[in-house]
Length: 178
Image (cartoon, rainbow, N blue to C red; front, top):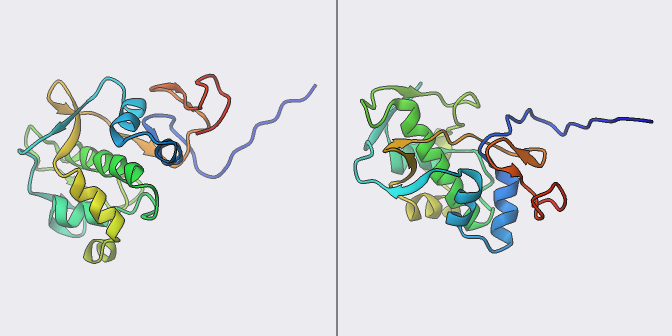
């Protein structure tokens, strides 16, 4: 009788989106809306015109939310499927506006490390075409519940199971990885 546990790299909080799962779902033909519904159940995708135009970014001051901050998010490979990139853009936008306090006051700031979201000024200055297209295609879209941004945690992998949605596998029972 034996028991083994394997860990592949980083700690997973098992909440929100598995980025590799989003990529596999996109490759399987799911739209970004389908992927959002899988990873953020109970939230609504809304296009909002009242998002802040700028946000306070630690060490960088006030930056344009759409044309600088989001262009500089370095959380997913830019050569991944366009639908996965769109989900990442929406998750990053939602995380950012929630972090700064929108819609109440939006005066807070966001850090640029793994503790918040990785932001690179060099990427923002010259964003990869596919990433820029994903940010632009989802401009103003955030995930909300009761008019407030939801928690849009994400991690590269989830180990196959998510607290928010159960087994993140093709059969929904732990078999067949996305």
